[in-house]
Amino acid sequence: MEEQKENVRECEDQTSPAEHCSDSRATPPSRGEFSDPVYKEIALANGHINRMTKEELRVKLADLKLDTRGVKDVLRKRLKSHCKKQKLQQSMAASGATDTYYDYICVVDFEATCEEINAPDFQHEIIEFPMVLVNTRTLEIEDTFQDYVRPVLNAQLSEFCVKLTGITQETVDKADVFPDVLGRAVLWLQKKELGTKYKYAVLTDGSWDMNKFLKIQCHISRIRYPKFAKKWINIRKSYGNFYKVPRTQTKLSSMLEKLGMRYEGRPHSGLDDSRNIARIALRMLQDGCQLRVNERMHAGQLASVPSSAPVEGAPPPHKPGSRD
Image 1 (cartoon, rainbow, N blue to C red):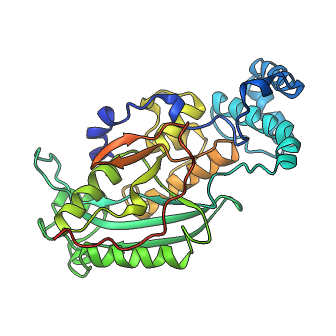
Image 2 (image 1 turned 60 degrees about the horizontal axis):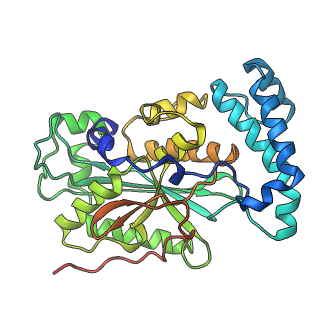
């Protein structure tokens, strides 16, 4: 499904890089705070790290018991983030600051009906609804949800769609329609006490899942767009800004490769894609990235969320009402 999503991402990902992701999990200081000697120490350390070879970076990371996989730029960023976090840790602890915005991140990567060449007016229908729950405190995948969905406009899957996603006609024929599956997904999120006891955010691989798939599906199913999915973390923007790489290097396969990881599972399986996206998110958290919401739906259209906006978790999940 990644190839299908790529068709519109070029014109959707236009947000300024400064809005995507903080460079450190430490709370950014005000301008006056940069006079503190600790920032001079950080600058000196960064200069030393910039002069290190790839092998020297790996040796240093190994000494610190940090991951040594990835390209040189990733290794350099990982070491810088670790050093900065260590130097700021005492002051953060003293002020009671936290280094994570959310208790949980919920990764979503839908699969939908498609043709090898989609007509301009083709309406994609969600056929797989997966979610992977990442615990930002333990830095582990805590649980997963997966359900298949029966399409109603194009009930017969194309041969291309079956081959791409691995989802068979028999599987969707036995599945429930989207409103029922969404209801079960909401119950799953509610049982995790997300939005009530725990602060959470939704995370996607680009803008397509929420701005296209979910938006179209809600229109087809004649239900309102769910409030808990109106803001999300676009990991492509966060990744590109944090590791300072161009947008052409933020495809799922490229992100994994740059981090020294391989895809696990079957490509274009919604659940497997979500798991691999979660692995990238976990590595970014470990490397010091403050993943935070950077996109939202506003008046039915895609909009960016600037880094200056207050950090808010998604609201408690509820099944949306009918649009009739």
